[in-house]
Length: 355
Image (cartoon, rainbow, N blue to C red; front, top):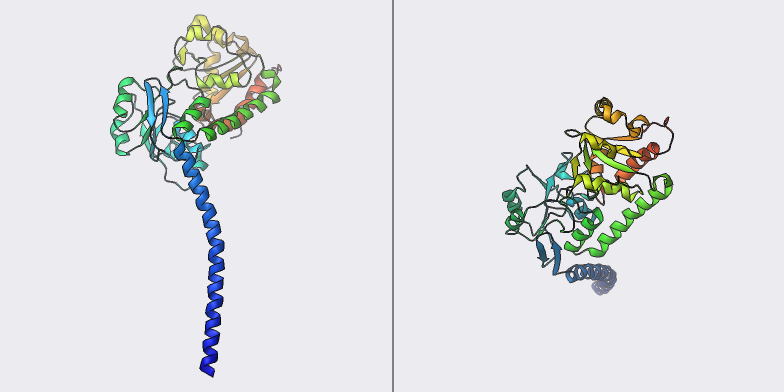
């Protein structure tokens, strides 16, 4: 009798456990199925973007499948890759000496991933052997200046996205840089959305500062004299995107380059409503510039319409980087300085950002 009762209870317990397991499994299967479906959909969406062929300065490059091991030879290309949720296996160092060549404006995109191997452009071009050792399946050189020979050499190891033909070397606009890289990664729509978000930041900054509209401005650096950036340099486009105009004869003087040193006879190009100097030391370089009689006699200097950006700071690096990730960081700091420079009040001091 006792054995029979125990058998009955055991059977009931087993049935209950089975029912509980089945219910839990059914619920879990539903969640897992949903997640699996979403993953499959994302994978299918990514796969449907390939193969893709993208034109550039040296022809076009075909990418057959979603890249997994990306090396960025372009000096700022890593930011667009990170913004699209991927971490390069290799990056090329340009400014700042940051870990993985990832600036503070992009560091949160790295997450728990391993920092990329940092390559260096020593002036002789990309470090070919080190790039090959990373076994890339895509090499990005969109914001760059690859020669045809360098392009052909790198193409032996992986598909290479060279700089666009439509612009000077190192002259691609950040919008197109982001969208080209998005297409190469199978995320064209996501890249456009990122661009639209940053463009909205520029639009708001311009709307909040109507004094920018129509005013003249230029970017320069006291490098071996006075080096002025031309209209195809991304730094100059920061100003035009905010509503400023560049000096009329700028490109005539610069020529087919991203920038050039101007002669003493053309210091008039600097006499704008706002002049942004990228300098190594704010106090020393400002004093040195004002000792130059030709420069000190310009209204832009006499009326303190200058903005000084320390090039070795995170802020200074963000001004030169000009990417989908660095721009919001940069706008928070540059816009208040420009606003103070053009407010028409010579008593207004252009302050350095707090950080």
